[in-house]
Length: 262
Ligand SMILES: NC(=O)c1ccc[n+]([C@@H]2O[C@H](COP(=O)([O-])OP(=O)(O)OC[C@H]3O[C@@H](n4cnc5c(N)ncnc54)[C@H](O)[C@@H]3O)[C@@H](O)[C@H]2O)c1
Image 1 (cartoon, rainbow, N blue to C red):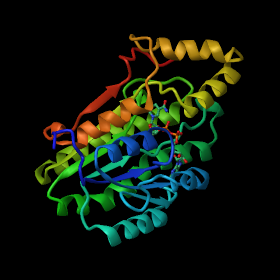
Image 2 (cartoon, rainbow, N blue to C red):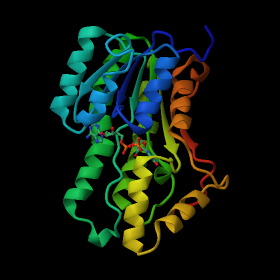
Image 3 (cartoon, rainbow, N blue to C red):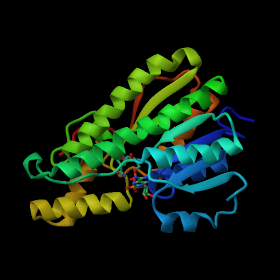
């Protein structure tokens, strides 16, 4: 077994049925882990039910991560299978509106904060006793480049992702003595469905072509590249594995060295 192995490690992933969450799930399964994932999207969940490891090492549940009752229910299901876990990946997060602040309505603001921050609180609160029973483990919070820089037209998103960093640093201090490590990953611009939507919204708002917006997004990284969902999945696996056993309280950017977000 190498230090990168996740053999029999029990991992909870929120919003794991597509995007970064799904890429992370697949890499964790490839490395031997047992994954309990939830998602709100029935179509994505049904597709995932056809995965060869479903009900063997992959357990899938429908749950709105921003609804505390549903998260409690999700954990009740998990607790019927295991009392301890090795890791929690707080992946859920929505892009929120692409508008200047004076045009954002309060419902959109609150929804973005609720899904991107409060959901992480619901999951983390329930995961901590299971990580303590395990005598240690890893919590990974998905922040963003917008959690370390300002992000024009995306103020609720940026506010939520800075909050995730604050939560990460504080939890790492609270949980260090229990050998529970807490880190945040800040992905750059991921080539995937979400960025297609973000590019469309920004092009509409600024009345410019999608191609121009796309080029601008890529040029924000000094490596002038897209980031891929697997890049984030592999970083999660590294942090969960023995190789990451003394890393905590860190904000890890996987972004090709993003130098601005505008
Ligand atoms: N994609 C990017 O470019 C990017 C960049 C930086 C940070 N991030 C962060 O990474 C994380 C994952 O991003 P992504 O692009 O894979 O997301 P995404 O928008 O592709 O959504 C992934 C999944 O989240 C699920 N979901 C949405 N709301 C939910 C809810 N309330 N409860 C349960 N599931 C829900 C969706 O059904 C979907 O399957 C997020 O926290 C995001 O903010 C993404």
